[in-house]
Length: 310
Ligand SMILES: Nc1nc2c(ncn2[C@@H]2O[C@H](COP(=O)(O)OP(=O)(O)OP(=O)(O)O)[C@@H](O)[C@H]2O)c(=O)[nH]1
Image 1 (cartoon, protein in one colour):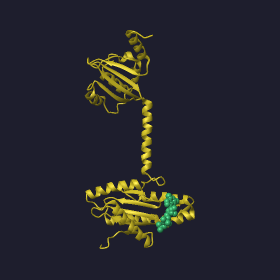
Image 2 (cartoon, rainbow, N blue to C red):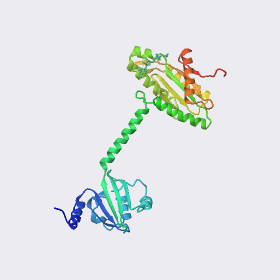
Image 3 (cartoon, rainbow, N blue to C red):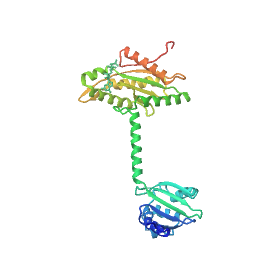
Image 4 (cartoon, helix red, strand yellow):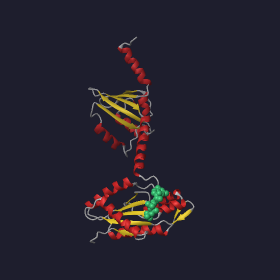
């Protein structure tokens, strides 16, 4: 059995009156001609109370009572000025609205050639919550991809990417910078004597200590098992030597706690200073060769890479 067109329209109205989606019709001069209770419910109002209100009056009511749209702006005049610029620009518009009670609605505005507007509002709170959870998961994953799991400082990849960008900037503004490679001394014996877990504690404590010795804008990371690296941005030779000595002294002079034992773990440091257009790979090789010298010359010391003719 099919319905006559008239009956169908009547049924449609019955459904609209009881459904969860909000419907409203505005006149060409933006006055509320009518709406269902679901639409009025967005503003915590009775549908009869908002009948005849203009769009602007409804928004002012919502703002003053703090019910309905989450405006996130100081004054309603400011909000209305922004919105009126965009309203009625296209025969069809779709946008998302966040409410003060944390619900989300997907709203559509359909304008007839007569200027009358049908607003349809569909609740999408569940989808928005899922979207938010997904977004946080993506953020956590990208953080995990950039952070060393044990020490929570930048991992090698993150360190190298950050340094490459900062090195290019230092070169653009013609400022020197220094790369420090740090390798803990005889770390194998820590693991062998006290266990891998104690070794892990030493690595964590060491990372914390080095971080505290640096400026906020220096770049620090764990680039290997017991190897750390520091990029001192806009730093000259004297400062680089001073910072390296400070880190070395801090580690050598103060034992770190590893479970129930306190261990004094020293570090050897290789330093390379940027020269002209040196790229990261060159800088790294130079710091690495200085580190090799520091190990060879007795450990617990910092060595500066120097070209043979220097
Ligand atoms: N506990 C722990 N140990 C690590 C980790 N990564 C690397 N190591 C250990 O670090 C030690 C490095 O040893 P070596 O490369 O021989 O160097 P070293 O004993 O520090 O000696 P030098 O560098 O020559 O002073 C090895 O025993 C690795 O197992 C880690 O994440 N945790």
